[in-house]
Image 1 (cartoon, rainbow, N blue to C red):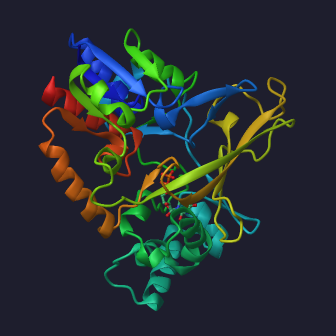
Image 2: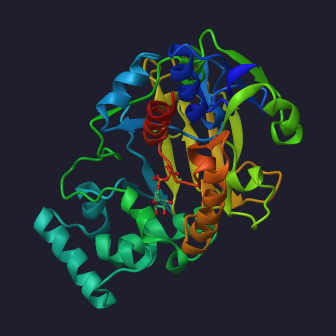
Length: 370
Ligand code: UDP
């Protein structure tokens, strides 16, 4: 008999497990996958830590979370600055003075702001109610058409007019030449990969992999007085109120016998014709891998394809539109009635969570229950 059975060895589950173990509780962590670390799992291929479930760049403004993760890994000073490729035209991201200069030839922040204002006026948007209107009112029609529309519709599989405005507010708009993608005080990639970081979190904690919780629920529930479930909330309840929508992602990963494929960790393909959304070149998340390839003549790249989730696929992004959020609320009401079970994390809370927010949520939960 354990105090806690933790279903899912991703970030939420691993943080919860660490805190519970440190509080003297007995803990068993199970995961259906053959590995720990959930979607931040990294695997070394050709000497490079490959982000197997998509690029994860740690960034936070939360000092408590930053010092917490630094207990388990040293972080390098990687700064995310993706490049957008629109039909062969390259633009700096997030939207900053380099972007505005390339798009319109403007030189000063004032000229850039005037250009956006002019395009916003022509579009006649006063109060943005969806992603398209939000985007145009932030950066104007040209940037929306070239750098946002195609990418967003590929990623979400829905017209921008039907998507919530908050998604685009994740991206900063800057009237400076600062192309750091995040507005966070702290940013970096764990040296040695995320898997090693999670392994350190789970140090001394019993972990069983390859175990399907929902298929063996009755038996597994007998093992512990409380359950922390971090899988999809609708799956937990057997989809009895309907299925929540997710976007899934598929990766095509290749090892290339060249030292440098694209010169940057992330290049976003923002046109609608290119079938992938972005290409990640994993070695550029780390340092000490020079572009001439003297220390590493190979490179590993992943093309990322977005698709609608169906049962059996990996759920990645919750589609937080009104319809899905309403359904989630109903599941949450059911979840709150489960005395023995806590349902948390990105899939358990159906939330477009960044890593730091997942950790903060797990830490808060442990403070509440332990
Ligand atoms: N986005 C875009 N063009 C880009 C990159 C992002 O329009 O080149 C929009 C798109 O709608 C996306 C959102 O910004 O869903 C958030 O992007 P972010 O990079 O935060 O997504 P994530 O890294 O979580 O996949």
